[in-house]
Length: 344
Image 1 (cartoon, rainbow, N blue to C red):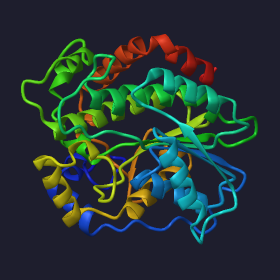
Image 2 (image 1 turned 90 degrees about the horizontal axis):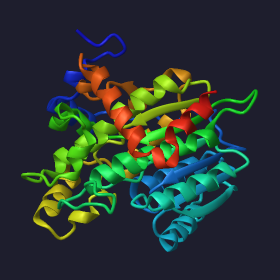
Image 3 (image 1 turned 90 degrees about the vertical axis):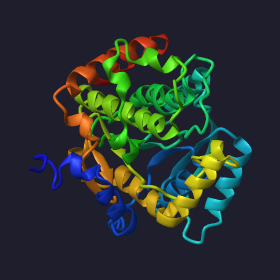
Image 4 (image 1 turned 135 degrees about the horizontal axis):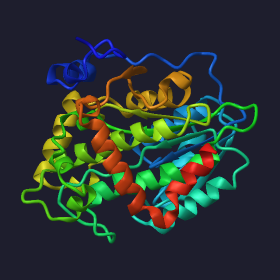
């Protein structure tokens, strides 16, 4: 029987047959013609190439007054800015390039402080991520995929809430977490450990880049589910989106030149979607629906199930455990207090 919220069960959604259907046959509808972003400000992270660049381009076409490209390399960000402005369908708004390094907590905090000083922030799409071909660790001690895709992204999410908070009489801002359907296939054996996060400081017995990437995205789904319970949709509307498996992105740059990287990129060319199609799903997550999308997962312009584990009986226990550990890990940045201040 289908999950009561969806037309398909999470388990069937996670099947290979459904994945192939979505990759090869599913069509993403265009954005409604009456949607305009005039007078609004948006941030897109990882926006100098691939999905991020295409998402930024499509948002700008919708009439944004200010687009902020959040990038590691300012020179590449400036090149992306010129590319977007050269688009024949480009809007007339302003594009700024801001530095953001997700492997640096200091950089994230500085970026968030800068965002809080904006007159307004209506949309934040957290697209930047990492697919690690070889196991590596951040200066924090955590494996890099978990550090970038989960801990650093969660820190940015929570610190941007106050900038996105609805102004009196105005609509709530939209916070979009770019997720992945690989989360549905993650085994997440670490969920049985207590504590959970500490296991990601240990060297893996056998490195599985697909499993770790999927797990990092599953962690994000657990966190978003908990965050959406604590932050009302009327304050900030929070959702996740799967852009699908796309070619022409920079996600697997770490594997360039390796056999694994060649295989992934070859397969991507066969079944992958163009970045512009994946980006359309991200734009839908930012501008379509109202508060009904809060705490949900979208793909191809539809609200879809998250990973099956999110709906299992033990999900609430895992989610709470992960939440508590994450709040403790990021306590140096007062993330718990930031959330409480936004809600109160």
